[in-house]
Image 1 (tube, helix red, strand yellow):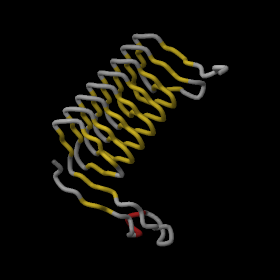
Image 2: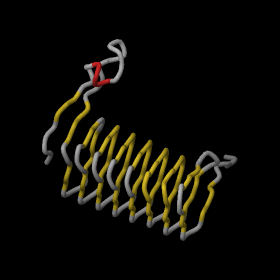
Image 3: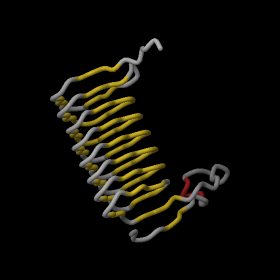
Image 4: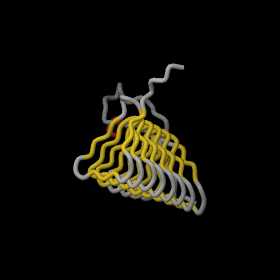
Length: 178
């Protein structure tokens, strides 16, 4: 299924960017050329993907990931950890971010987007389903065709250029007296 796999460690001082005393042996980072699947896949990090990740089903990222090209899934995308995507991110299902994600290019989601942490999109983001932010969202432009909900007083979002929300903008307060 995969083109090649290479385990990389940061034992070399030049690789870690620090002094020899700071160069502690770290867990190996898996390196892939590209990942394609005809069904749902679950990936365990840390992992660097030099190409793209494409699945005809769902994609689950558990751990830390760096993807140099696009991520495309015909099912849901779940991020549990940290994800950096240098290309476009496209999902025909729902996207759930639990942790931190950085997308350098456009993001297009045909389902719902739920953020439990931080999502930064340096391009435009388009969400067809409900958008729920329990944390922070930053993007260049935002188009939401359904509702946008921020959860709690510590959740917020910022849009650098154009913001279009076709549904309701809601704030969910967490002040229940159990």
